[in-house]
Image 1 (cartoon, helix red, strand yellow):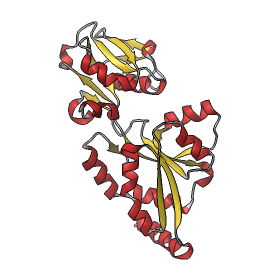
Image 2: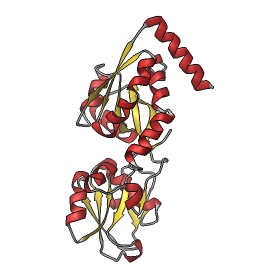
Image 3: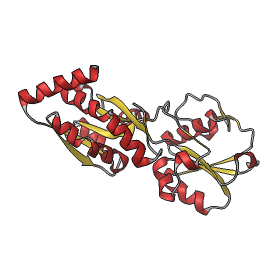
Image 4: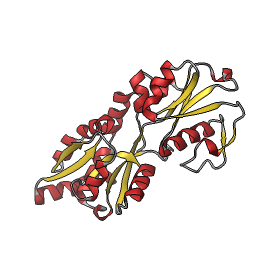
Length: 259
């Protein structure tokens, strides 16, 4: 009922003021694809959605901070906080968490057969390495000194009962290493990279992140735009059953709605 009343208010704004353009920066998959789904719904509310596609993780936040975009959709909160801190950018905040691209742990052998010295590949960048190790900690493979520390590295492993060897590799190279290097028994792989070697995190991994992950992908806005009518309209249609069904059917578990 509440959502219905919000839509009625938004429709009233449409009739009063006409069409407004919303410019959102997004990376191609799955973000831009998801935004395409809501174009018609926003149009009915009087908003023209312009999707500006980026193929990097730097420009979308810069473009948002300078006012070239109204919002962006490509990142999670830890990345936003790290990026803006490093660049001295202020005033960018999360408006809504939309989905998780779950990181999965993949093995070439049964978990029970892991032996001392077996190599496990993990990402080597600050955001993803901590994320990978927390996943392994949460599923009992290792014990971290502080499992709440998102920037954990292999040096933060307190207990390694299986005596595994962790190999730190750039995230984008892990799929090739996993498939081609016979000495690597397992790997923690980002969903988008896993798809490049035909692995589905839900179907093929030993375990994956869940909706409680702090790495949910978000709609990012300038803090001064909180409460804007266009933002209410955007969030309303983006968290609809239509979008949930699209994500579930299109990505087959490789992308998980969190709304």
